[in-house]
Image (cartoon, rainbow, N blue to C red; front, side, top):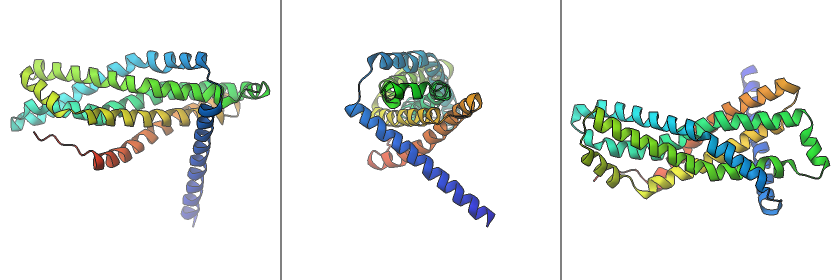
Length: 264
């Protein structure tokens, strides 16, 4: 009975949390339709989310592409299929690793920062001060971050995938000795526009999850510095878990409509 009660409390807590996220999403939609657009906050978040995240995303993408290439070619060498490495890395980086790795990096760097900043404003009553000045906290704090993430994350994914593919070309041709012509041929022929579209769809979904979860954790922060720290940790953990779960669901759904095919 204790285990059943525990499962019941867990289910209720999850549904309550999910309802709070949906309510926040509704407030963001209302803000986008009827609220005041704040250019200064939007541009500030573009710099914070997009520009300052480039280096970590580029490095992560480059080494992810390198590791994927090395592991793939170690196996493909046994079957004399090394020239297919370009196709595997291109599709793998676009459909899976590029969006997922970028999302996880942003959940750690950007999501935690959002939760900490908004949470500090919440516990120091700055959010209440915004309300007293007739400024809706969602308009001022959440919506600019939401829009900035939607603009930034596709570009960051493109950088991650681009440097991942460039590093794969170097590893494949220079380290494993695969002829560049064969590598590039399979990469171009078997990497299609739909693969790029899937990467962008996943990226937008992951970006929305990061902003909603992180800002929600900041807005519900309480109990001073302890609450801010807990909200920051939860923002990173919950965002990462949500990205991994959403990636599985999107992969299953998108591959029904756009199946993967590496056949010539």
